[in-house]
Length: 544
Ligand code: F0G
Figure 1 (cartoon, rainbow, N blue to C red):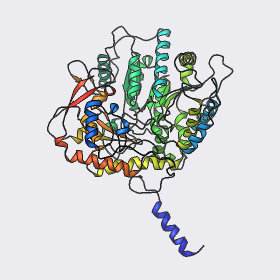
Figure 2 (cartoon, rainbow, N blue to C red):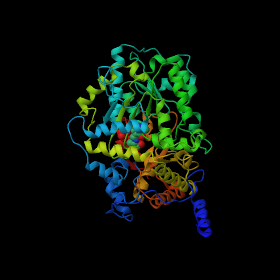
Figure 3 (cartoon, rainbow, N blue to C red):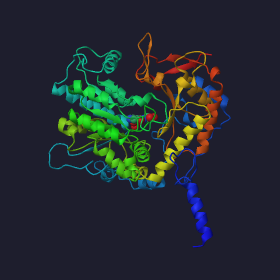
Figure 4 (cartoon, rainbow, N blue to C red):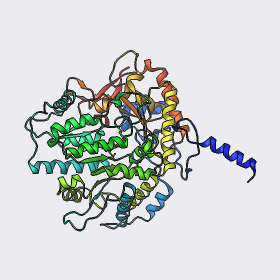
């Protein structure tokens, strides 16, 4: 080897070395485009978009036609990935048998491979339902089934008490539970069941409330601090959890953890926090579940930010995370890298299975009535193949470097353009802090997040309000803001779909709004203010 080429190799290597955070530098993506989709609308169609927005969509981003969005559609990172050629190829081999198709067995092995041995093992010895893996067409269908059966089995067991929350609870925690009881219209004679989490996603919250249970968010204190210094702002407050279980464990059927914490800014949860929660839950005899939609992205943050794991592979970290859970449900539309799919997985010998020995039977019955059968969960066999392949891809280090690097660069550009984003930036989305965005401007309309999403649609891009409108409620007279307060607009980045240039054009449009924030109009709610899950359904008009 000549000295001169060795010299250049050394230089090239230095040039591509990974800095601490991936926000500032460029490396080629570890893939290239294999198929592209041309738009048949143009960024210049501003008036047409305004027309559709006002007259068809009622200023609701969910109701705006996607084919009229020429820029980035950042409404959700869910079900929006570009699938890989390996996934498309796998789909061609899909087995569309009516029961127990080949894809199911491949997927079951892949779950054990991805999440660790011990998951999805079949048990032919115990009688009753032997399955651990229950497929659903998406995450919320799994949640709905889970909480329906849980509520039914709790009612059948005859436990639970309607007594008010214990006086031993920390005062702030007690008052949060009481205000939830009031806002849910919880009848006095109903048994009180509480499901704690770092933060429940809105569908999870909706499914829990639908079964007359109380979803309780216990985010860590740093959750509210907007500071680069907190690497794991998705964590749960373990002291509050311990206090809750100390006094109310009989009314807590299980503890939840959402990884990453979507509602809390897409922030990761540390292994130390997972271990602490496991210990506290076990001390009080309460099972522990994950809402695992973005498990691989969470693992990437653990690798980068928790010393113990700097040298571990993502797969090893995922195994370590899942070692502590008794079960999980997952929307495979995120880190499954597919357009549709979900699952519920219950550890065969876990605390949950021991506490609810007839649960799997109940889920199987539910699935036969609602989704087909646990072995396909309303999905074509070919989709199971795509999920298995997606689960192989998503734990590749170079994929996650590129994926999260892109989201962080997007957030960094917004921040450098003077737009207040939640920092550190999370794994799948950038959250713009509306309280700081509008700080010091005239007018205090609560729903300026809706105005921002509407104006950005006219600019040609779609984001989502996840704040006072999405998470608050209206009691007929006044607004009840979310507790703890969340007031953001979220720009969720679809996986493998956009290039930096696309995202940077969103930054430029956002900067126009930020530079003219005094002129952003408020909105009137024309329909749906008092409805549940109202942000999906409401209609608005500009008030000025
Ligand atoms: N849990 C979390 C943490 C989620 O983010 C979602 C969906 C679900 C459950 C429900 O899964 O959509 O397959 O039914 N989140 C999407 C989002 C919709 O945009 O954040 P699903």
